[in-house]
Image (cartoon, rainbow, N blue to C red; front, side, top):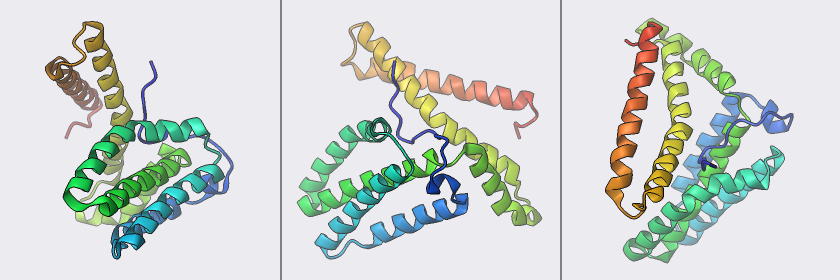
Length: 208
């Protein structure tokens, strides 16, 4: 079974983006997000800036050597939510705002995917620990914060995997159209995994 992914997994490489510092990539993502969000008036400028984010994500993916399949894996899970959101935006705010919102979210998803695909998790965690180091004086534990971040990152594909496995199981029982047949076992499995993770952390003295 193939599990869709919203965030691209790290792919080793030697491109310019792979060699770029973690801070530069995350800073570029933050700046891009801020610019695209703030440039919303007039309508044509908002649409153009959001479209520019999509183009930037695609170009950056090409520079990083991502395959077409990687881009599809990022975009495919977003298609239905973006379609629903677009329809709602058309009804509530008009076609122009709908186009801007859909393009904005798609562009930021592509850009974020490039960052994660070109940055090893260990490198990102090391950077977080280094950036938060000065805050030790006020009681912040950078290593614990980095651990929480790594758990959050690893939980996303795992949760998606549980969702797709639960959906397939419901379909196999002929209950694919019954929300309760999906939601109840899915929630139970997610909660169980959270408890298992907590037990594993407690066994290593990291529960507090």
